Amino acid sequence: LVFNIRGVLVTYHAESGEVECAGTRVPLEPVDGQVRLQILVDRGSVECFGNGGRVAISQRTQPAPDSRHVHVRAEDAPVEIRELNVHELKSIWQ
Image (tube, rainbow, N blue to C red; front, side):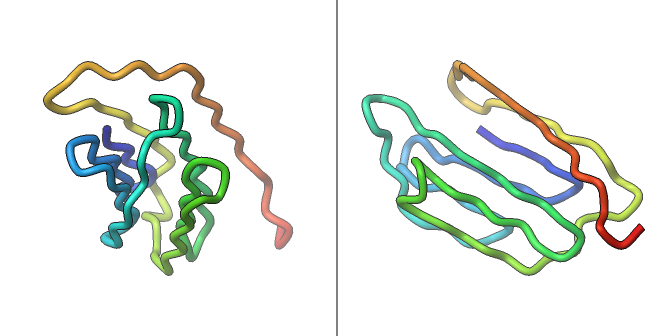
């Protein structure tokens, strides 16, 4: 399962049981057959939390400033997304 969020890739590799966030890969095994990801993106970083904080990745990165898209795709196998929430927060600097 691949999320492309403002040009930053977050991937869950089901075959190896790993999550990859902006190039950093760590183990994340399913809990009761499910994987839960929380992804936070701001101007200078991407943070990924798996299964309620069992794993955490924080990456300094520069998402494309003119890109506001979020794309999700499954590769090689069907995937069931039970819930997907997207929240946009306003800048405190404006």
